[in-house]
Image 1 (cartoon, rainbow, N blue to C red):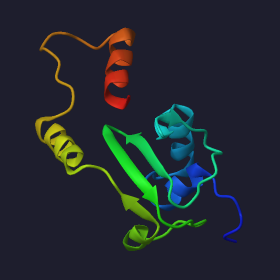
Image 2 (cartoon, rainbow, N blue to C red; image 1 turned 60 degrees about the vertical axis):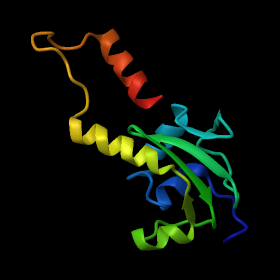
Image 3 (tube, rainbow, N blue to C red; image 1 turned 90 degrees about the vertical axis):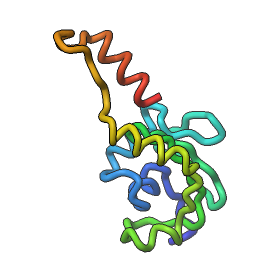
Image 4 (spheres, rainbow, N blue to C red; image 1 turned 45 degrees about the vertical axis):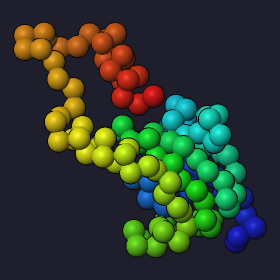
Length: 126
């Protein structure tokens, strides 16, 4: 089983970075999962020792693959398969954003336009 190639979307789902495999696939498709700064496809073959950068919601996460796995594991076992290289400052930034709220709009500004919404999404996820 370990000789079988493992897709990045399946790996990200198995180590509990994404709730569903389809969310992991969508993150790859939209360019939020990168290896060496280059976006990768969901079918990318994972190898031990590789490092990946990804954006999950607003968190810029960095991981290193320690071992391959083909099935989802419990939260306590994730550390055996992946090393989290995300800087402590990134978690502090996310905590601050959650503490003070997400977007703030001026009172009476109304709903964001389609252009505003796209700008907000680009700012949050890229």
